[in-house]
Length: 194
Image (tube, rainbow, N blue to C red; front, side, top):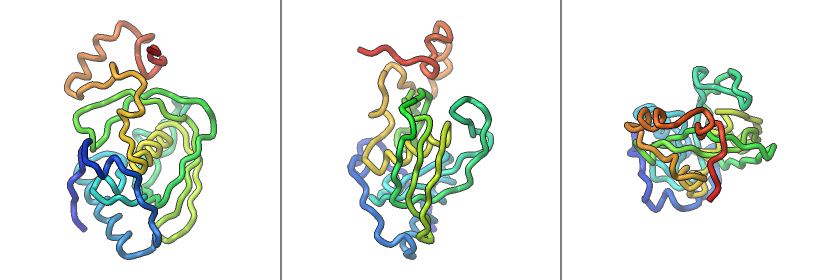
């Protein structure tokens, strides 16, 4: 197991569609997952996609710590243990979307407001080849959508609808202070269409 470097926005591997994994139970896939877990632990965060460490395969890992778990209605939710999802498919279960801040290990030092479906079903297989099918909402759904976007060559800035809400982390406090009131909080209102 080895900590791998995280690729940054601009690397061509992050722009391509990941290849499906033929044998999810292989030793190579288990070794890749171990490297991904070590890499994620080394840098922090809640999820990582294989392309982010230079492996263009359809595999993501994620977890939702109980302290960060939140349902779509804003209520507390249960955390999600470390999950391996191979060849994932994400299906929106409603048209409802919500705006919230996101960051990404491949887009360091920035945060942006991204619309995501509030209620989804994700499916795929685990390391033992067992089928996985889970309904998710709130932060759990956001994390899964964000990680699975990496498998389609999409980084969160491409999902943003208003680039005024792309902010360097070191400027977040000043940015939030500059908002005139809750009506301008991008996580609570839809940005103006241009």
